[in-house]
Length: 291
Image (cartoon, rainbow, N blue to C red):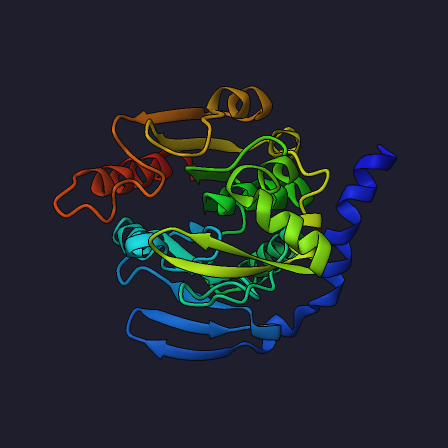
């Protein structure tokens, strides 16, 4: 128990570090979607349904080195689909990371979790939100972030959806394979460069890697008691850990869907692929029942 509390300590410190300056958000109205500027560079897009809304709300978390709209704007499309289904959403840009063109990354896993829990409190304070019906969705590292946030505030989240989520020991996952040379460089020099083929080269700090130490996704999921859905393609470069996820989660319903031929980003960059629409339909239909 003491070890677990030590692991959570950085999250709790960051929760205090971003007080509810969130209440003083600068709101810019853009049709049915509002751009929200919160404290210390934390921002996102708050979307409420134009027709009837019963207060159900989803928080959408982007993947590593991406932004709130997600690869191929698939998370933006999810927000639109949720709105059409009568569900509000807030998709956020993590501090120090949330810009798909940004190459100098300052984020940490602790910071991602703190951003999530603080934004969750902002969402809970909004008029019309039913605090009993708030869920979180995360893509890739955003999935692990969702699990980390659920471990801190398990009573705040009714349901969770993971897309292509990272799993297992995160420090091991982010210090081996394609990340190994970058990790070693950061350990020596304080920062390292990582080339993401076909996209961009990013700079990562030593603190980024250290923030994953002791973080195991399934351990976080064991603290979560709400509904759960994980979606992954058979061609995902991350190892499938849905069996481990389902064993860890205690709530119901808990389900996993495997999509044949889908890659990590659900073939969103392949013109004419039906897979992105299938992922959106699976997600929204499930949330209609579980949220």
